[in-house]
Image (cartoon, rainbow, N blue to C red; front, side, top):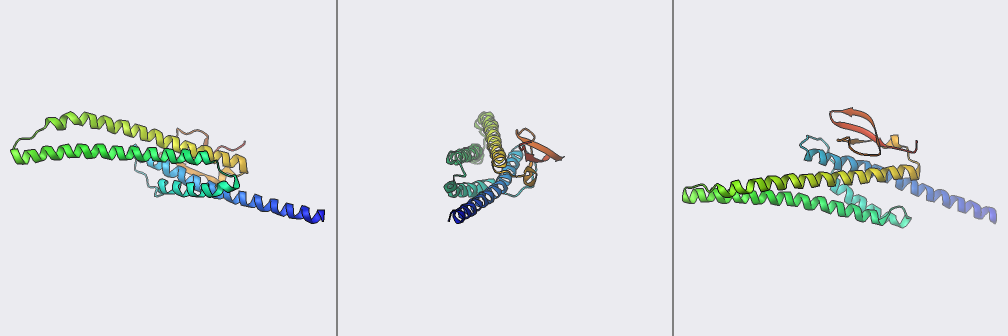
Length: 204
């Protein structure tokens, strides 16, 4: 009876390990896509032409949904999911603020043009007076967005490294692209035209 019990426990243990291994692999594949996608968006913010089609926002939403399901396995830290959501909301708020600033500037130009048509005189002062403010807001918002993208990318790099360490994954099987070289915890294996093929640092 004890032998049968031990066999059942061993089978259950193997099944649990298999489940954890599958989740770890699936998570790692999700994360490397998210990392590359966010950093591609950050590079575009700097004015670079990047051909990378994944939608980081959609990927993160899928990841959060999976994470909330997998918390039942004690696999994810729910607090970490909250951090992701908060950072994503921050980026979205900044993007909306940038669009609003441009819309306001466009409205001022439109009003000035309308006055030119109606009265025959161009009211240039409001346009000139608001231009420096709009340029400053654009610089400030983009600087904040760059920092937010950086923090979000580094957060996922750190989580990827934790997955590798905790579940014995082979980093070389999960290499991914970065478009900047200012991140910590990665090894660079190939560099071409500002694109870095990297993997997270393992236990060696």
